[in-house]
Amino acid sequence: MGTLEGKSALISGSGRGIGREIALRLAREGARIVVNDLDAEPAKETVAAIEALGGTAVTCVGSVTDAGFGERFVQTAVDSFGGLDIIVNNAGYTWDAVIQKLTDEQWDAMLDVHLKAPFRILRAAQPVISAAAKEEAAATGTITRRKVVNISSIAGLGGNAGQANYAAAKAGVTGLTRTLAKEWGRYGVTVNTVAFGLIKTRLTETAAQDEATIDVQGNAIKVGVNPQLLAAMEETIPLGRAGTPAEAAGAVYLLCTPDSDYVSGQTLVCGGGFSM
Image 1 (cartoon, one colour):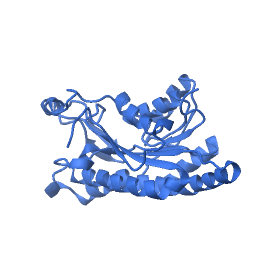
Image 2 (cartoon, one colour):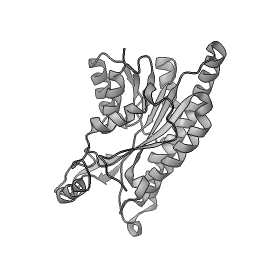
Image 3 (tube, helix red, strand yellow):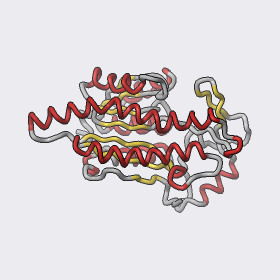
Image 4 (cartoon, one colour):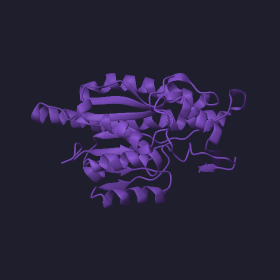
């Protein structure tokens, strides 16, 4: 049996990149996964990959920023798996500009996806988690340990030029995490943050040209890092390289296991030794 056998997990933004690797990692350990992505096809592909491993997964497609998404996401876990044990707030992207060029739309977009969306998901989950904890305490005298892992960034810890919006949102994740750790301890829930450093994904791949973009609800967002800049960034990392999505997923997995049952309200930096 895996360390997460029988657990059910919500993982936002798990159709691609780090989120997909988190979903696969938790599924390998027996967790049943609700896969979310903005687009249906990547979500279905992650479900297929989990099923190929012998695991169980369902999809909940849509934008985490949509009104009512949090309730729908949580209800998918309840309807499909009978409850909720793990929440990983992973969905997000960057939309960079120096502050004098930063628009209200860019600012609001980052706050919405990185901070408001996790807040809404956790708010929707509270009645389910509270009721389950009370039922368990009444029936057995013990409460199942549940886990929340919010994804942040080293930009949220030390700032990053051109990312005032992203850094502010990710700094807010730290406050959300620490507060929920205090509020939800009585339910047996640990709430932690993983702050990623430089991880190689489609958002940070080398891009010699300026045309590399992703589409987020009609907005063409530039992605990719200039190869020279990427090389310079990697030189600042003590391990000498960017991390892989699988390594990023490993950090999240650590905070979902029973070995972290007495760790809460903390931020784990997954950055190859890089320090702000």
